[in-house]
Length: 100
Image (tube, rainbow, N blue to C red; front, side, top):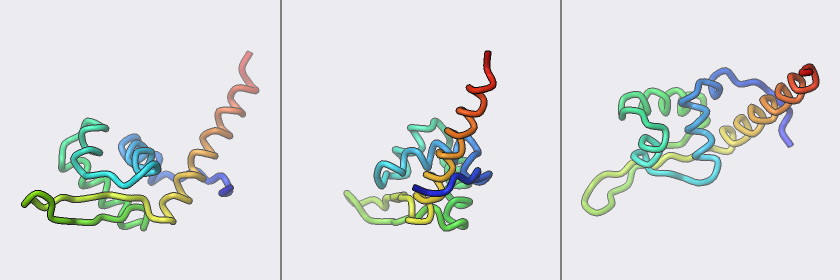
């Protein structure tokens, strides 16, 4: 298991949702966009930030006569996402132990 690390890049709500979706499988750009209910440009900005960090791989392929864009988490992205989720879970436990 990865050492818990809070990752500010992943933590932004849109990027956290993207990583959660991609943690299960590669997904087409449009599927991710529709799942998190953002515009193409907003998703592109999030993907660019994740790609520059080495967390997301972008693959383009022709399908049905149209160019499609596929997104997937890289091994580094999977490791960072798992560590971030573990840190969030740790914080929840800490907060729960302080609750009345």
